Structure formats: structure tokens, C-alpha cells
Image 1: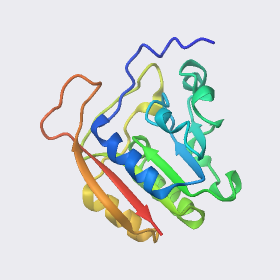
Image 2: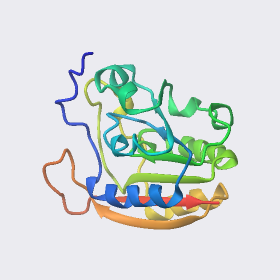
Image 3: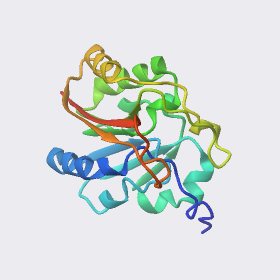
Length: 194
């Protein structure tokens, strides 16, 4: 198996959020999780021994192969996140995670995804950079470009609109590429639940 990208840093907004993320997942005790935009899979790796069945959805095929996503997830799908039909993917999905992924598509498309998901999924956890957070292609992957900026109120409004109220909302400083925290860079971690 070739994992040539494993040694290259994958962009992530705030590793500090992971402790809260894992706590929320433990409290929710989901049977099935869909992780949209799996990336390198490292955020979900600690959960791969959990009782939950975890499906990773990744739009960039080299990540699936080169980061060994089939070893991290129970199922791995090569699919654009905008093309996921949640009600057909798994019949009893309890949790959708959108970790550092919704900023990669226009906000109106993210709203459509969350609206479709809210029809058949009990809980959604999102992690998204707040405000302006520019990023271009990474490892030749155009899907990594940021195409939307989000504010705290944008996130709250979208979840209200799709009928899934936010139960928890936390803000963390970002840590770009694991090297330094830049003033003004923030990321939110939000849990929306029926």
C-alpha cells in the first residue's frame, strides 16, 4: 500500500477541538456515522474502534489510496459531498460529521447538504473556520480551495433554517498546518441535534 502523502501535513483548522468532538460523539453513542470530507482520516482515527459503523466520504481519490482511508473507515466512498444521498446511504444514520469541509463549497450548497441531511440524520457535528480563511489547492487537490467564509451567525441561521437546532457551540483558535496560532483565526465546533 502506498501512503506517500502521509508525511505531508494536511490542513486542519483547530486540533484543539478534537477533545470536545470525541466527548460529543461518546455522549451521542451513534450506531452509524457518516464523515463528509474524510481528508486524511486522522480526526476520525481514534473512533475506528468504537461501536459505531463509520463511513468516510472523500471526493479526491488520491486521498483514499494515499492516506489509507480504507484502513480507517468501515466503508469509504469516493464521492463529491454534494452528491451524497443520506437517506439511501444508510438507513439508520445517527450522526453526520462535517469537519473542516463545508468551507470548500459555496455556502448555498452547504445549506442544501445540511438540509438534506437533517431530513434523515439525528445529529450533525460541524467544524468550520470562521470569517475569512483563505486556502488554495493542497497536494494538487482543487477541492481543498476555500469557497465560502462563515460567521457565527451564518452557522446558527443555516441550522435554524434546516430545522436542526444547535445544542452546543464552541470557538477555538486555529492552528494552521500545526505550526502557529495566528491572531484572529477562529474555528467553531457545533453540535446540532433533533
